[in-house]
Length: 415
Image 1 (cartoon, rainbow, N blue to C red):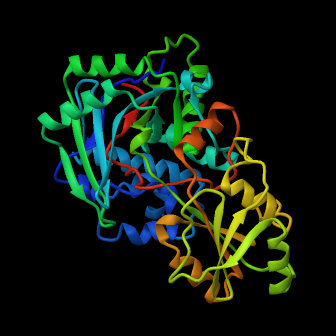
Image 2: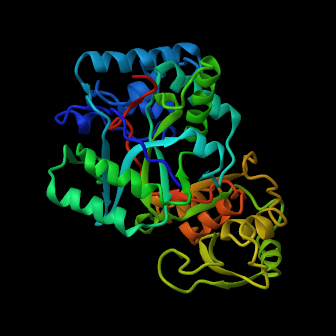
């Protein structure tokens, strides 16, 4: 079973929702966040990145940053920028990008389900990033950024959601600066809430699509609070954390491309010869850049030319080793370019598909990088298969779009 729990959401007033909503804290630098909030005192970045309201140069992990974040959140609540619903509700959050929509249910997931691996992960987390969000959640006494979860479609859930959105007016409906539509409904019917909770109890597993660090941190804070309260019942709010649950059929994973700064001491000819020993290689004669249209194929941009690479004679039965990102890493980036661990090697960088393949050409043509690789996107089925087998994907395997906005829903860890 899977647990979906309603909560007393803290939400921006309808007239301020568009100005409050902000991209996740981890998709921009502190400097970019300072620029983003200029002229907008309502931006949720004042909560997610408290250092932007402290002197420039303040360490992002200084204790004062978390205290400032909590202060900003409490001030926004006191000023009426946020209101809290009187009863536990569920919410519906629809994002629309380039004519495609994905509609999720906003509620709380259970830390016990995560600890029992019924909420499945596919990425490792970095301890320092976990500590940052642990301090943020604990000091703010709230989950401020929703976790992006997915599940195998259930017709009854889809029907219930469609019926509600088709018969009720949204509380928020706006288009953000990046052309993403954001529409939110409040489910305030106890009967419908009970129906959805019951329907989710028939789902065998949930999967983290995006937000592994936020998820791990929310769970760790919950465990910390349990340890501080030995007589806890399991029903306290800290036993649950803010999530948006999307059916897998509605999700889109974009390519997550690679650029490398040098050819590891090889000449261009030597490099191409080494690559052709493992991949079928041919110069691309088409117009424009090369976007792979099927698995096990890659575009490679080198010296103002695109090449098509096809994986040849490589075992594709292992859930992780068969991923396109794994094949490129294990059979080209590591043995040919000497990039053994892409998590720490400064010679490699990753470019999300939302930026387009023109960004790859730009990085190479400028001389910043020597070679770029365009990838075929990892599928949601591959993600689930890896998670079901208790395995971990290589870093930077998935790029989900559109991104959930922070600030539209806040879950307090106590009542």
